Image (cartoon, rainbow, N blue to C red; front, side):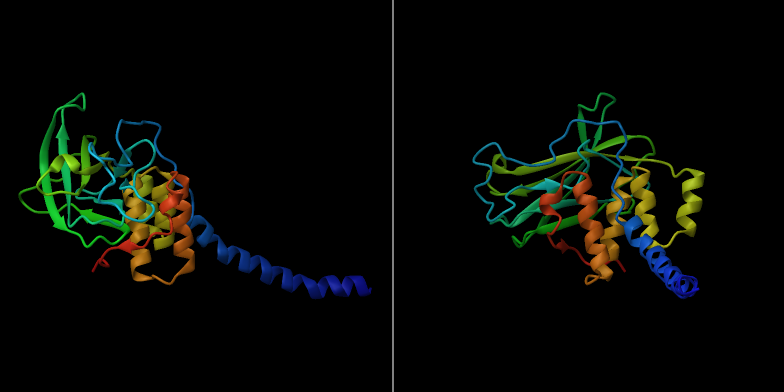
Length: 246
């Protein structure tokens, strides 16, 4: 009889423990690994210049790195997506972002958008959103574009630039995914984008959550898991250099 009573007493506590485990599931889901599409394209995720490439870089990690999957292709649902890269500590005062339109073979490039901006040499993950204005049309669904970021080590000699580049393609949101996203909590949106291989939306969503909740340990862990899943674990602990989205 005692053993029966003990089981009866223990049963409610088992329920409590299971409840706590279930409550913890969103954190695990939010930290889901990224699953890139099978297609890969050529690109340079880690940068080096043509002449003494690391002359203006200090500290470690000592490379300019595009936050892209190893396939070098980042999918997005956004008409004007946001791009991310790791900016190493450097003596450079300027950086340059360029978006290119490419031909069917992906070779000839035409600059669609270019901007040069000041930097203060601080190391961290930087980002840039394409401006949604009349001078830049929205990305076309299903079309490949190429983008690059250059660290301008010498404004008088651009051959010393350190450059990384990658590819972006806008995709249409499937009906089922659109319904899931509309009903999902913010943490679950990260998992949904990641499991569907939509890289830029995954990173943007999680970066915005970290920006507004900088002390949230679960979000910090999720960011580390995400970057580790695309072999970028060496920069997983670097700070985000961004203004929170309003």
